[in-house]
Image (cartoon, rainbow, N blue to C red; front, side, top):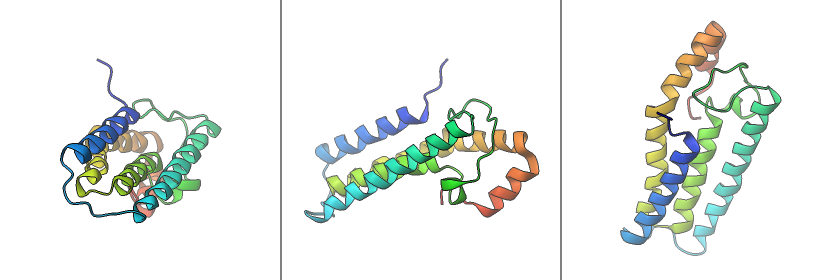
Length: 147
């Protein structure tokens, strides 16, 4: 069976957040014009994902979490997060929460974090440790899983 990849989880969480906002708009907490701050999150999350993807390509390693990495990247956004692509997607979901403005619209980013922790991050970190050993362990001590 083919495993669902992170962009699909991201899209599902995006849809869930939007649907929940319109079906159960629990307390509007961010109103106009402050909700436009969400677009700043869109820009930051988008840049983070594009930058990270370019680093994967430049280093000729896979972006797919189920494949074995051929390079250990510690530059760029990897200096602040061991999972900058997941962080970028999370920031995009937070941006959606700001734009929609209801408390329930923030459920998407929470679901996404839980899904990535359960479905990918633990397995990816194990693979990185097997592939890169002590160098990866030292990196884990310096750089947080998310930030």
